[in-house]
Length: 163
Image (cartoon, rainbow, N blue to C red; front, top):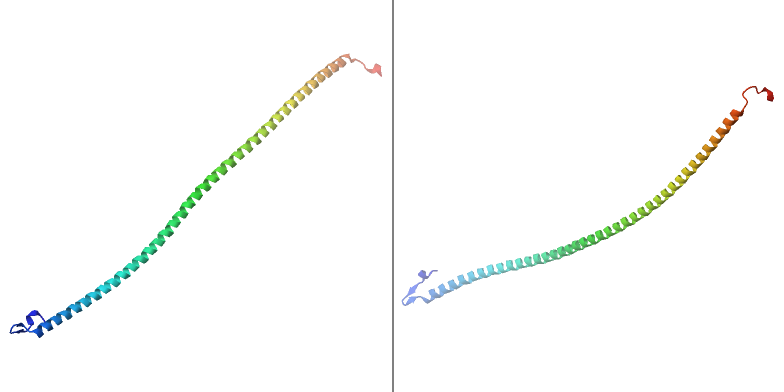
C-alpha cells in the first residue's frame, strides 16, 4: 500500500487505513531490519572466521619465523665453528710444517757432517795411497838400479867356467 492508496474520510485519512499503512510499513521495516541483521550477522560471522584464519596464519608465520631464526642462529654458529676449526687447522699445519722443516734441517746437517767425514777419510786414503805409491816408486827405481848394476856386473861371455 502506498500513501496515495489510503482511503480518505471526511476529515482526512481514515484511521484504520492509516493504522494498516503504519503496520504494513512497520512490517516491511521489521523485515528489512531482520534481513539487514541477518546480513550483519552473516558478515560478522565471516569477519570472525576471517579473523580466526588470520590469527592462525599469524601464529603459523610466527612459528616459521622462530624456526627460521633458530636455523639462522645454527648457520651462524656453524660458520663460526668452521672458521675456528679452519684457524686451528692452519695453526696445526704451520706447527707440523715447522717441525718437518726442523727435522729435515737436522737430518741435512747430520748428512753433511757425515759427508765431511767421508771426504776426510777419502783425503786420508788418497794421501796414504800416494805415499805408498811414492814408496813403491822409490823401491822400483832402487830395484831397477840394482838390476842394472847386476846386469852390468854379469859376465857376458862363457859361463861354463863356473860349472
